Amino acid sequence: MKENVGRPILDENDRLARDNAQKLAAAGLTGVNVLASPGAGKTSLILRMLEYLKSFGLAGAVIEGNAAPSIDSERVRSQGFPAVQVNTGGGCHLDAAMVSHALLELGVGHAVRGPGAVFIENIGNLICPAGHRLGEKITLVVASVPEGDDKPVKYPAAFTIADLVALNKVDLLESVEFNPDAFATGLRTVNESCKVFEVSCRTDQGIDSLADWLVRTIRI
Amino acid sequence: MKENVGRPILDENDRLARDNAQKLAAAGLTGVNVLASPGAGKTSLILRMLEYLKSFGLAGAVIEGNAAPSIDSERVRSQGFPAVQVNTGGGCHLDAAMVSHALLELGVGHAVRGPGAVFIENIGNLICPAGHRLGEKITLVVASVPEGDDKPVKYPAAFTIADLVALNKVDLLESVEFNPDAFATGLRTVNESCKVFEVSCRTDQGIDSLADWLVRTIRI
Image (cartoon, rainbow over all chains, first blue to last red):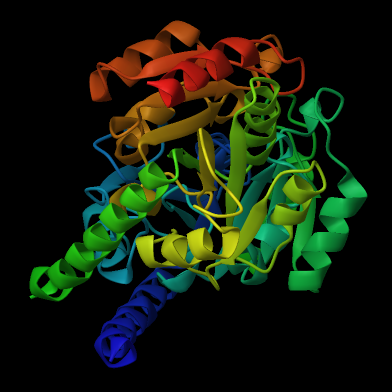
């Protein structure tokens, strides 16, 4: 019964996600779905990527998902990048319909054109967002050192679908208990092929390497 | 339509949650529902509380919720406390039926009797667990310094229902950007009355004060 109720909704979401992907591709843009726990550093990392893309003459824009009324999009706009806010009203993930509206509001294909990327900052949650495609080409999971090295095995839903994992806040490696080998081993048990970068938005460590990978992927 | 589908399930959950609360009360036990982001330090804090309760001659046991197959309960059992594991198979929150089974498995009223507490470690997620009562008397939300000072306003669902907030990892206050006043102000906009303790499971700072509050609440 539960399955019968759920399936048409998921199919409708998948159909809209395909539409979003086509709309982004037609505008020369790569959709990047950004998943993480609350406070892992999604917005900070997106801002670093936007600056890097800009320095290469590439376009960048953001769809900011929040579960409560929030003004994260203003933080992005104040840095000079296009951004729209999507508030889910307590909902635990974005869906393709929300992103479809946001792409219209951003002016994708008109005001915002590629080559470049649209970052979709999902709700801070390692479970529910993983079940809903949005039209992304790349799924970026941001983990952070203070969360501990066991997150890939404890929250496989997000890590399994990642194309790219950014292990953020590596400047705190000396301050907390975190075994990078255990993190890497755990990640490989749920995802053999994703690309992994150790980064710190605070010290800029690793940001160039991650952004460089992104630029090359966008240009393919 | 969505509401019609959802309502009977929520009512059934509420009914089971009341049964769980009665079963715990009849055994002299206080249910503590522990909510947090992934990696905020739920298990570590619960272990500290168990040791403290034991030193006061109070009983303590744990229901360990995980979204993926995990053995967090063994970490608790290895410290000499009763614990049972509940794996949600990818589900984003515990529900009252899962807890009802776990209370049976723990032997509440038989092997496990009060005065004391049963800690219910929910799935790491600040949104979905907040919508499902389990039979708890106390809702404890564990926030952590590296997540940032804006979490109460960004994830009000959990913080609004908290009776008790533990701000963990305060040993990292010097290492990250975190404004304790902003955290306190944000928390008070969503929850005027909850009790708040600054703690560190690493240095033991504040643990005695938090545990002391818990002991007094259990004995009321």
